[in-house]
Image 1 (cartoon, chains in turn green, cyan, blue, yellow):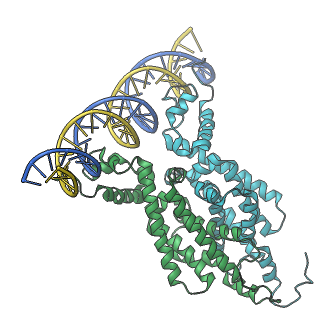
Image 2 (cartoon, rainbow over the protein chains, first blue to last red):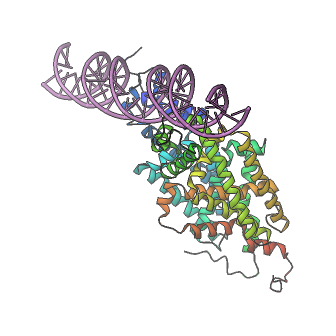
Amino acid sequence: MTYHHGNLRKALLERAAAVIAEQGVEGLSLRGLAQELGVSHAAPSRHFRDKVDLLRTLATEGHETLGRYTFAASNQAGPDPLEHLAALGHAYVRFSMEHPAYYRTGRHPEVAAQADEALKAANGRRMEALLRATHAAQEAGWRQDASALHAMVFGLAAVRGLAALLHDPLFRSHIGDIDPDALIDGVMRLVIDPEAVRAATHAPEDDADAADA
Amino acid sequence: MTYHHGNLRKALLERAAAVIAEQGVEGLSLRGLAQELGVSHAAPSRHFRDKVDLLRTLATEGHETLGRYTFAASNQAGPDPLEHLAALGHAYVRFSMEHPAYYRTGRHPEVAAQADEALKAANGRRMEALLRATHAAQEAGWRQDASALHAMVFGLAAVRGLAALLHDPLFRSHIGDIDPDALIDGVMRLVIDPEAVRAATHAPEDDADAADA
DNA sequence: TTCTCGATGTAGGCATTGACTACATTGGAT
DNA sequence: ATCCAATGTAGTCAATGCCTACATCGAGAA
């Protein structure tokens, strides 16, 4: 046994993510973490000021991972702004399913309440990117009747709400066995509604699709 | 001072709701509650088996209150199924804003994970009612292209997501000062989209302007 | 090479909290 | 009037977060 662990900070983050994925944020204990990693109960304090500091770090990692998801989605999606927006929504829900620890930590009220500048900035960047994608979709005919803000919040709410439902035991048990992917597809189609867009764009009068900035 | 409190159970629930509204569920402590009410630290255990039991009771109260909100909304809404569905969504978001303690407790993972039969049943009833309202809206032309389940989840996700956003400090601080009511209206209009429904119901044939209600 | 010092980990302690047990008080039913 | 179930009290314990003082390590300075 070595006196020093080697990379305790990383190990703490990984183990914490595993515990949160299994038992939720409530089930996380710094002392338990230290014991599982074979270090003393005070060792974690060398790397994280307090429990929220660890959670905040995890949440920031989660933002970065989510960033990679949305980046990949942007690249894989075609040039159609509607498809792009749908891909962003898909990426978020998939992220929430594949990284439950990041997802739960990011939504934890303590973390949001004690967010540092890095976390706020990461969140802000994602919101701005979403707003741009929303704007592009509107220029392509999506929800032109609404303000950009309302349209963005609509899409964001639907996506975040869907993720919340898929993580809600009450919802899951009431719905019974379903294919999450099919549900995500179905809901995203209702959010984007390309049929309606096509109908509106090819509408009686064609002053609607003037797309310039 | 009397040896017995009088109605400690009720007092505990009320005080707990106040604390949760101020500091969130994380800020709630049974001993603190007891101290504020002037009873011994073990007194709460006479009324609630443990902390989750108290939270679960609060969540059940919340379901009842939400039930009253939706009942009132149903009554005040006109006969139009679309208007009815929008009113249900509105009622949920309004409930979440006016009763933050109920809202937060109901969404707390511990509560959902340890829900008892009463809570599951209350949740199930609301889901069934929402499914019926969704079905009626579809019969009136709303989102007929989607399955009833997908349409319901779409609406539910948008509404729950909007409530989540309005309670999210990160979202609120990024958005800046806004009028929540205007945002709720705007988003609900995008969920229901009566214009699109009217367009779809009055078919491709162009008697578009002759039709009025 | 040896020394020093900052980084990292340890040991102990304290306050808070949830939960358990044994005991006390009350008021209503008999 | 008596009994007893409901309600409240006091004490205890383990778990936890956080604090302080001390120990160990290893890399760079001397």
